[in-house]
Image (cartoon, rainbow, N blue to C red; front, side):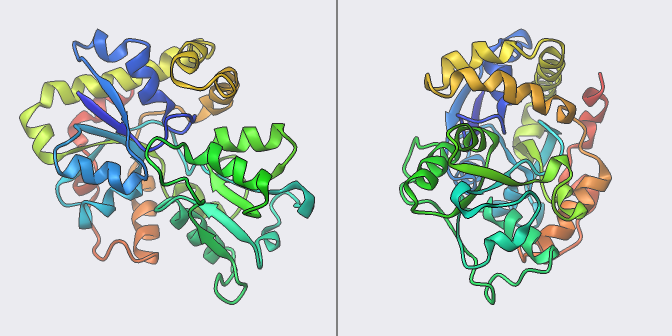
Length: 307
């Protein structure tokens, strides 16, 4: 089973990475391998075109390759809530939850990830064009094999951007180096409340794959659920994965990041979260219709989320 993730050196998609590296896929009889495909729309395009079997990425981004949710289903969540952080340069004296800091600033954000920040600023009443907020990819981060969050932290240090909207690993690197401060952590209560459900880290497969390989698909969901449980029981297991997948500078950080994320490790994809995500998708223009919950989620696997 080929599994695409758009960010490897990160806690964002760690449950699916750990499921592979800690042997939970193998325990379900699946020989699985990870493939870094960045940005996330390329990962979903690879899913659509049959190059990979699963994508562990941001849920709303499936719409990049599957308009109106046609041909794809979310199997489960890796974690609950929109999981990116807004970090601004320390020398700008940013204050927690004060979004005025973005006015006239350059914010680095990956394609499709940026939509979450755009929607959040709109919800907060900030007109991006009028306030001259420039949100764009970080130079060099689109190259194959580059991790966006860590690259964004480096760009922040160099002064080529004023802030970034990215994963927890890039955030941790920037904060520990003293070059950045967290302005928004949506999952822990910052920003407009509605933004929590804009998206979440999910696992997705095509309808064709599910229909052809229902048992393997169910096994993949069980592997994710077992991984979440194992990490909740002993988050230090994350260190083994970090030592194998991450560079020496980031590997030692992952266990603490996973520890912080444990309250969000729940495989459920609720009707409420899907409805809110679709509202967000319509607001930003990537969805036109009003698909039903079962049009988005592979509901046959619901019993496995709490198994």
